[in-house]
Figure 1 (cartoon, rainbow, N blue to C red):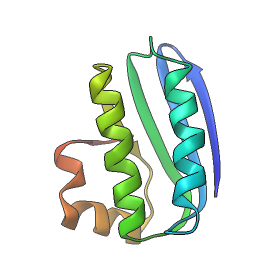
Figure 2 (cartoon, one colour):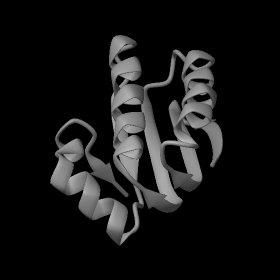
Figure 3 (cartoon, rainbow, N blue to C red):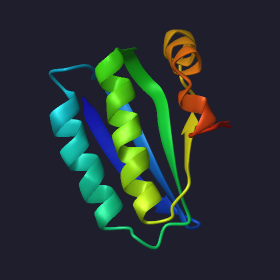
Figure 4 (cartoon, helix red, strand yellow):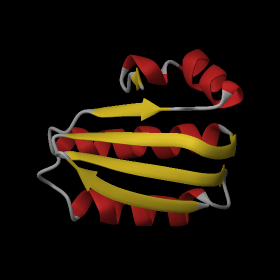
Length: 103
């Protein structure tokens, strides 16, 4: 799992590439938390899932955990460009009700 972050126009874009599963979630969590901690003035966080090839319940947990961290800082979170399988999982799990999908 690769995690890259870029702050543009007040939005922290976090691009995830690879698989988000039980084995990769802990390292991705540490990297992503570091990005959030180093950009506390971001007006929004967008998770770009276009590079995610596989996501299971650990991926949902990863996203919800980052949402809670951002919520403590009053930063809204969106999800961008999930593939069909990830989109289906996120929709069925209700994640979009707290982290809306954006373009």
